[in-house]
Image 1: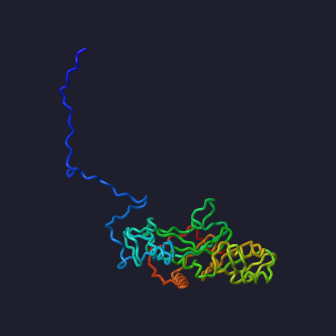
Image 2: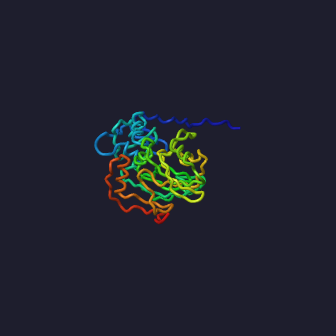
Image 3: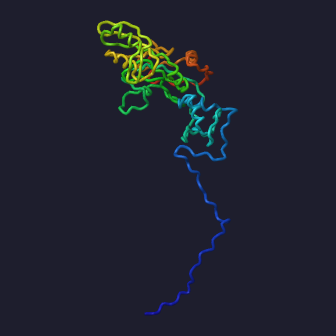
Length: 317
């Protein structure tokens, strides 16, 4: 064996490292907050309390997030931020402002000022007042015209077995005013019952009976007619508790065979509005409803033609 020849190749030396000042700065990307929007930089200016724009309470109430009073409480508790800065009373939102509630991003631009719209929907039995139903039952919101901004808000609910007047609006503040317990808005129902009801039973229902969730009563009861075993009554309540009218009758062992809401406050179900159809209030009718709710009248903005209803067939019920 031949001895190994010594190698003439010298080990390569690593190149001298560049001074730190000559090294390229590392490029970093801003980290997004969640998957909704990037967090604003610290240089972003806080929202203003004067000048153009609308107050946060008004915008969020219009979008149905909460009532103005509740939003004011959130502001006092420090739950709202605009451009990363905790909101103070009187702040106005302007284009480009970044709003968070409890650190969750709210895309408030879709609640921008728009004409208030109010629909009177004749809900039939079998439909549910929800946006999604796991049982795939017919839903009320599928019958309504689509809105480019905001969404339809139901003023109170009707259970699947109750028909009649359902008010819907894109104005969250108006909806809150009409539903809030402190307003005690009258709800009138036409009720068909099976069998005879004594005067003493009717008197008890007007005086008040104890239910599982507290005392309740009818503010008024009027006999409306009927033949044979079926009798019609019109009753008025000023509460929105779940299934209150049915539970009041059932507390006296009275069977309700049909229940229909015919009035909510000053709004009456149109006589010739067919089931599953809508009627939209005119500007003059809106002014009267705003007055009833204790809200200032709106300046009606002239816009393009409104979209047609998905199922609009006026006629007899």
